[in-house]
Length: 344
Ligand SMILES: Nc1ncnc2c1ncn2[C@@H]1O[C@H](COP(=O)(O)OP(=O)(O)O)[C@@H](O)[C@H]1O
Ligand SMILES: [Mg+2]
Image (cartoon, rainbow, N blue to C red; front, top):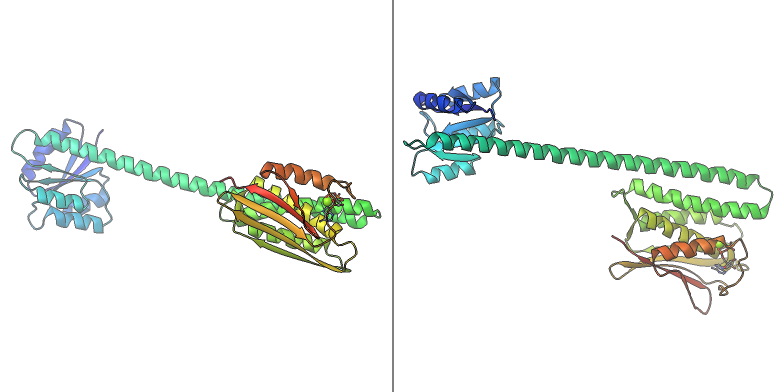
């Protein structure tokens, strides 16, 4: 390692000795006799380290350390003091010096000084490299998150486009069954789009805040299934729970199916009714999704009135989330419960 050193000491004779000794190891030593000369050198030239003597003609090395810090100079400083001056060395270290060397009359001063300088420069380089690497990592993470948010934005928009194409097809179709089936497909696609939308609006790009996602989703389902002849009140209550994207989308699909069914089947004759959706934390790592209505109730193992595709979707998705869907017995209405394991 070849190091450029600025040596601040009013004793020119010592500095000449140091220039000779360190020159043999390939280091360059530039002499500054006072602070002004030192600042001028630092302004004009690049250095790797500063060696600073405690006793200067008009100030101490501690004063110099304070000035260097005030000037924003962050080069490693090796402090030189006389023997029996441990307190001075300690204060220098506290004031920002990287290391100190005791000036002795014997032969060990030069090698000690050389190794203190080399060590300080190596430490400073390591610190700089680490700071750069940390900054790189931070920037790379920011870029990746921005990119992911952008991708989620585009996926959500593309799915919204697909849903609107389906809407067109629904309005053009004469066949009621085709209309009904396409409407369900459209609701499923909207549930997936909503998950991507909540990913790019959340602070954490990999997890979905379920209360926000589901409340938006229910707003969309309520809007598209709303029937002018019937008043169905759709209520929602959720604990703050966040899930990974794939689990969140499964929950969104299940909610879509269960709520769509309740809209379609629970109140065949009534003019009004209620559908209640809740997502509640159960212990630390489980949640329970419920969709309840006060309608006609569900016959176990009854033949589906429609395609029965909904039950199949709910069955496979709820099995991936936990023990699976259960219908609870009630006097009236239907309560569907889906336990969800929360995976951190
Ligand atoms: N909330 C509910 N109230 C009454 N009946 C229901 C309810 N949910 C589901 N069902 C019954 O369960 C059947 C199966 O639902 P599903 O698999 O989604 O099929 P589809 O919606 O295509 O008819 C429905 O056809 C309906 O008879
Ligand atoms: Mg259905």
